[in-house]
Image (cartoon, rainbow, N blue to C red):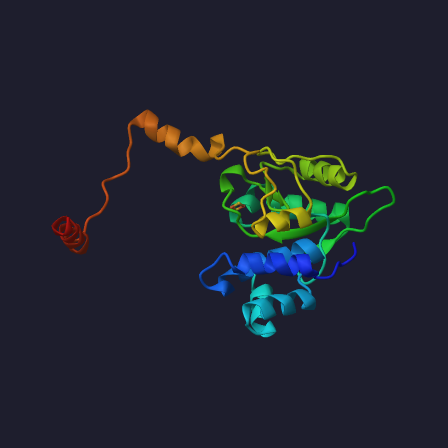
Length: 238
Ligand code: FES
């Protein structure tokens, strides 16, 4: 896909993000997501634009962009598929899913699969660390949307549906959007679909249900002499 320039509209939106924060430089992370939504990756042009708006050096922006793995110096597919290979997902099948997809797509880690004749979308593959969704292991993410309880077969079916341009939904509800669309949402420009998925699925609530069945409750908050002194002070203020 082509790399559009950082035009006046994007400069305006980058400034809008920076203005959301008391310290403008706090906006750098979403600003970098906006650069990715426009250009598909972190480009030298995008780095220069962020640096100029925040009045910091390009080296400082680059330091941030190279620290976090969500920022890419190279292009990714329309659908960036991340397979969790951290401990729990790995033992539950994540390693097999990653190996199968690597083989099926004929790619290494963090690479884009060749677009075959007839494919309408591209796919890239990366192994990722724990996504705090261990209760649905093994987990795969597509442009940061969850695909829970995957198997090697379901993962292959999913990437084939994505390459063919079919609509695919997260196992939690929302329709998967493209990498650039997802990056725009991460930059803080909502796509109006925030309520498409549930807030907490059954596997996340098992502990709560067991606690209710058994009448368990959280212990009282721990108090310390310092907390007591603070409470007393608050009371005397009132
Ligand atoms: S180990 Fe995969 S989500 Fe936690």
